[in-house]
Image 1: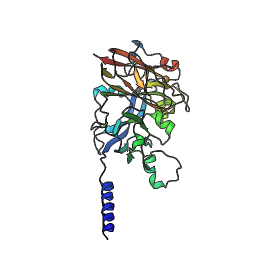
Image 2: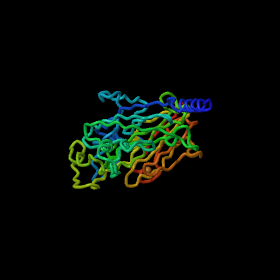
Image 3: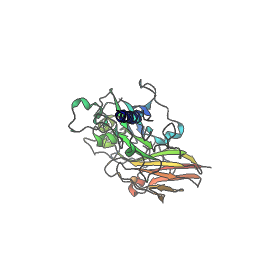
Image 4: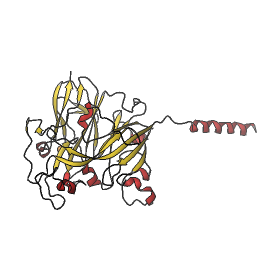
Amino acid sequence: MRRVLLSLFGVALLFGAFARPAQATIRTYYIAADEVVWNYAPSGMDVITGKPLPPLAPKQLGWAFHKAAYHQYTDATFKHMTVRPADESYMGLFGPVIHAEVGDTIVIHFKNQTRFPLSVHAHGMLYDKSSEGALYQDGMPKSTKLGDGVPPGQQFTYSWRVPDRAGPGPGDPSSVMWMFHSHVDEVHDVNTGPVGAIVITRKGMAKPDGTPKDVDREIFVVFAEEDESSSLFFPANVADPTINKRHVKAAGPYLTDDELFSINGFVYGNMPMPTMRLGERVRWYVMATMSDFDFHTPHWHGNTLLIDGMRTDITDISPMEMRVGDMVPDAAGIWLLHCHVNIHLDSGMEARYEVLK
Ligand SMILES: [Cu+2]
């Protein structure tokens, strides 16, 4: 009898240990997809050379287009957009950035404020089929598919868990980046614009806001060959005389010269400069989107980085590839950051960053 009681006591202790609530944080974000008119070269200049932009190609609509972007909002009313600080204006079309620590759960309240069905599909996270945000025949009942294509004006809540395998691996620094984007009609959705980032910090390495403790400044850059003739807005852009001022005729897809080799939605140095200070621990999150040939070789002038444990000032990214690089700048000044693929560089895939004293 005594032995039975003891084992029951043991089972109770064990149960207690497992039933103790985990130290997990729920990170809640309100994100809408909004329609914007986006100008890739708002200064109207080639800021790198100080000269005018190159002349429009014969079938180029212009430098500005109707696009969609994800925006963060303060609450469930989706009335107040979260104000992006001035020092993050360089992020342009890209964002928002979600931060979480391994063990957390991320909840995204999504509202589609555009005219097209769109979704939020996350890379790297652990989710149920209903939170995948990708539309295809996956054997699931229709009742689970609302998040795979949220109709205009409607909302959906995605829930993603952040287990170890969503966080940094043994060779990674204290945080890794994943992307999220719309995946109803993936090729067209991504060229329409909405793409954001998720930073996952190693367990025990996150500040309360989820950013890594051993980093002073995080910088995000997306190298994207934006094919505007693959955008969902393509017919609307062609038909809009404020966008298509020269009335370029385009009867079907791929009939314009609108492939913009952009960084965060900017070409020819129009990206506002991200700034950092000498000696700061700067973490660069770099990725490519997808297009006909979204292979890029970002090159940082002036300073070096540690990527995959190796020292470099250049890296390579394939379509939708994501990379993390750590820089401790020791050279002050304004420095070029550009793609080393010649045709991309010639087409304006260049920006600058500034290291302050
Ligand atoms: Cu490139």
